[in-house]
Image (tube, rainbow, N blue to C red):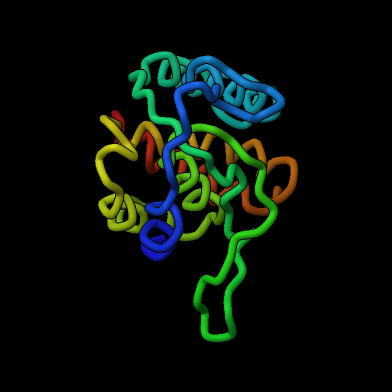
Length: 179
């Protein structure tokens, strides 16, 4: 996580104000609107996996996100499944982008949540601390990670159902940090 933050994401450059958030072929005026769209799509897949109050909480969480006006061109599918390493374990590339205009925190949390292993604050915090303030603005890490986990649980159900128990365990861990 630390190398991804320092060697890749911290080098992202801001987009111009004329760019909209989200995917190029499905733009949104506000970042919050893009996240709400992702939340609704994920909720359709997750439905019975999490209790109803969790779904309502996620919608409230997205609605309450501060407007930070942070626009960067992101990888958009920045998960470990798209990382390329050398034989000695050095990250040399990230393949298969799904470009999104948004906040760099999105790519870091996407990468963090892309594996069900070590989904604790101690894993992500050192990487996040390497970001310059203009890349994150004001944020609540616990809530941002919960949102990333919500999206990931939907992906897990579709593509990696064997990992669902680990993701729901991580969901409980991060939800307890918010309560």
